[in-house]
Amino acid sequence: MDEIDPVLKADPPRFSEDEAVGVVATHFGVRADGALDVGSERDQTFLLTDGDVRTAVLKISNAAENPAMLDMESLVVRHIARVDPGLPVARPLAHVDATDPEDALSYRVLVAAGGADHWVRAYPVMPGRMRSDPGELSDRAIVAWGETTARLARAMRGFSHPSAHRSLPWDLKSVPLTRGMVPSIRHPRLRAAVERTLDRYDATIAPRWESLRAQVVHGDLNIDNALLDDDGLITGIIDFGDMSHTALITDLASVID
Image 1 (cartoon, helix red, strand yellow):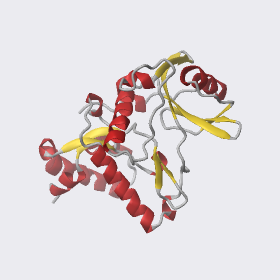
Image 2: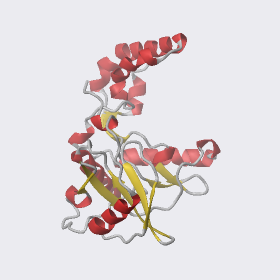
Image 3: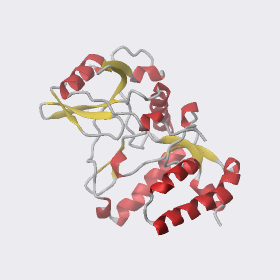
Image 4: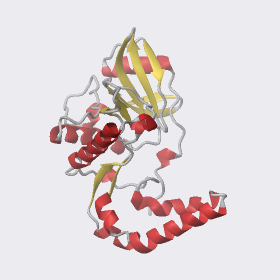
């Protein structure tokens, strides 16, 4: 089993708001006079504004990020747009020097700051709001959320990329990575429950893993990676950084006694 992706251990970028405004203007031709850092787990994301108008979203990648991962994200969005144009996926903007929309290099630019190089990408502003309370979602919204997730997986079914074969702690095939974290669970009963679950995984699922159907999936379509309307329906899928090649849930369920 590979080690956890180093980008999960590296410090996120530290661009200022003025630097973000300069980057989006110079490299993507987007006018802005202000930038709001909206937060990100391992990268840095800015909402660019021009007066009262939201003009673009700028995503600055962690210096440890493999550019092949970013290319995978750009390519899968284009794939989804062809297979299911109605899915509200965030499509990257081409930079000012881009010449070929089918070339993943058209959607990222290298920018140096703070002694490190960072790949930056820009996206149009999509409708909806972030960080909704999942407890307030109606039954209709939850059903629609499931339908969107299923459509997304189906649209990605024919997509393949070498960078999808990686280890993420929340990917089911990477469960063995979590065993080293078990000693950090202080409560003996909870620690024992986790150990039993991992033992069952090793005995039941691991031996059959390679026989299961698998595909590239968006592994983290949660409330922080989607935009919602006032009814709680998804209006934008905004983060493809957690894609991986994993077994289908339906096949995985078939081997659990």
